[in-house]
Image 1: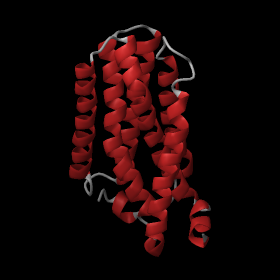
Image 2: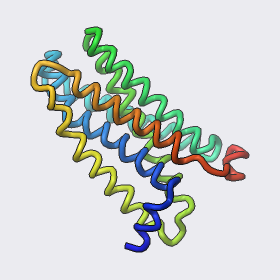
Image 3: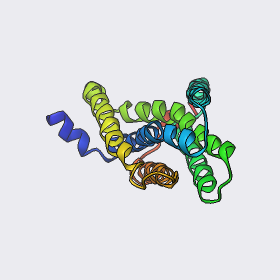
Length: 201
C-alpha cells in the first residue's frame, strides 16, 4: 500500500497510467458496441463481423510489430504520440461517418485506426511508466493493469446509453476517451528528457 501511495503521487507515472487506461477503455467500448453497430445498424452478417473483428486484431499485431521495430531507434514518447495521433484520426473518421452518414467503409476505417493504435500505445505507455520504478515495477505494473480494467468496466456500458438505432453514443464515448488520453499524455507526462531519448535511442 505504501508503494501504491507513492505511485499515485507520481504525476508522470499516473499520466502514463491514465493514458493507457483511457486507451484501453476505448478498446473496451469498441468490443462492447461494435457488434451492435455493425450488425444491427449496418447489416453486417455474423461472418462479416468476424472478418472485421479479425482485421482489427491483425491491425493491432501489425502496429505492435512496427513499434517493436522502431523501439530503440525512435524515442518512446514519439512512438506514443504517433499512436495517439492514429487513434485520434480513427475517432474523427468514426464520428464523421456517423454524423454525416458516410457509410459502412468509413465506420470500419475508423474502428481500424482506433483499434490498431492499441498495438503502439499499450507497449509504449507500459515501457514509459515502468522505466523509473526499479523495485516498485511489480506494483506499478499491477496498478497499470487495474486502471485499464476499471476504466474499461466504466466505459463499456456507456455505449448503450443512447438506445437502439444510433451509433452516436459509441462514437462519442470513443472520441471522449481518446481525447482524455491525449490530454493526460500532454499535460502530465512532461519531464526532463532522458539522454537516451534525446539521442534517439
